[in-house]
Image (tube, rainbow, N blue to C red; front, side, top):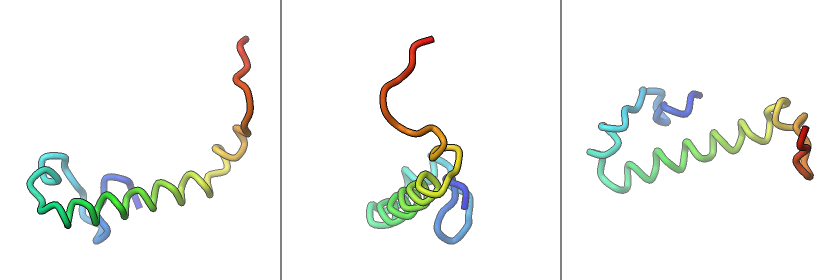
Length: 57
């Protein structure tokens, strides 16, 4: 799922989000946040970054 898609797979434009009822907007945002979290937790590139201090070259 791409982050600019609604749970039903339709593309979302910012202008369209603004016009949605608050409950629908929250549902879409919650779904996108969950998808972003899953991507972050399962993305090997993110895992390879590790953690800790930044290194100044």
